[in-house]
Amino acid sequence: MLAPGAMLLRRDAQHLQIGTAPGVVVAETPGLARVLRLLDGSQTEARLAEKVARDIPEFTENLSALLNRLLAHGAVVQPPPKPRRFGVAVRSDQSTERLAQHLRTAFGPPGLAPEVEVLLSAGEISRSNVESLWLAQITHLPVVIDERRVRIGPLVIPQVTPCLNCLDELITATNPAWAALLPQFERYRRLPLSISPQLLFRISAEVANQIDYLSRGERAPTVGAVLSVGPAHDRVELQPVPFASGCECLLLAA
Image (tube, rainbow, N blue to C red; front, side, top):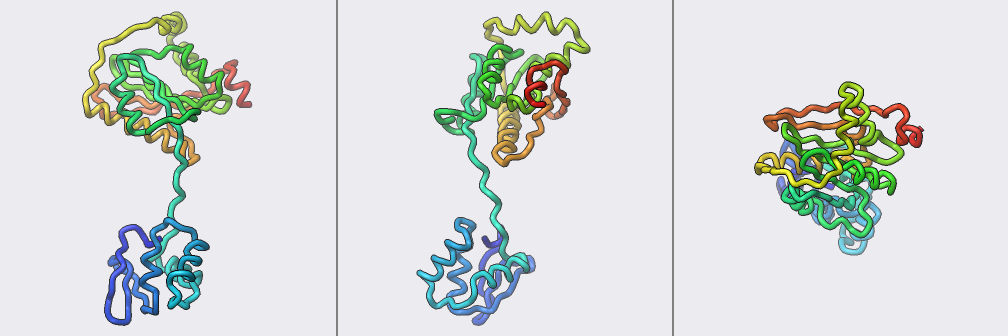
């Protein structure tokens, strides 16, 4: 494809120019301008060669040599690989339905077998809901909105990365009473929750960013970590979450 932002221009009667900073000048030959206009990144070199041979017979240059020459000068670049679209399902409680609708609009229909589930909760999330996803081998991302922050993660890839139980073990190590609180998270409740438009878009952007890493086959920041947006919603912290010794996810990942 032509380098992003590089316009195809006519310099004079005998020359074309690709881009303006400073641009690459090429001598015009029959059909060259038509060939260059096809470089939009939508087709492979082989398909491009077929199209040129069929539709631009006046072009007699060696297409591969031309492309290599333009690549060397930066006038043409390899198009980035298209990220694979993930089927993303969004679960929410009644308090976070507004945020859920915003995320569903961003991600689109999840399909019949979503690959990732985003779990939204006002207050701590029910651990049994998370455990069912872990047992079903479904990648999931908890998003908890509590009284002082928004906590995103850890993003759990079952049998591969630390899970929410690992986070609980980490918290319990410094706050032993946490273990007594965990069963109480199962209770049904509707908490008053007001999400400002600024925070709504901030959460959506952070969640979408984590899914985008997965779609590119890269390690998301919330794999083995929790991302927290601070009290003023302008400070981001990343807390590592290691495997908990004795946790089933560690044993299966080994």
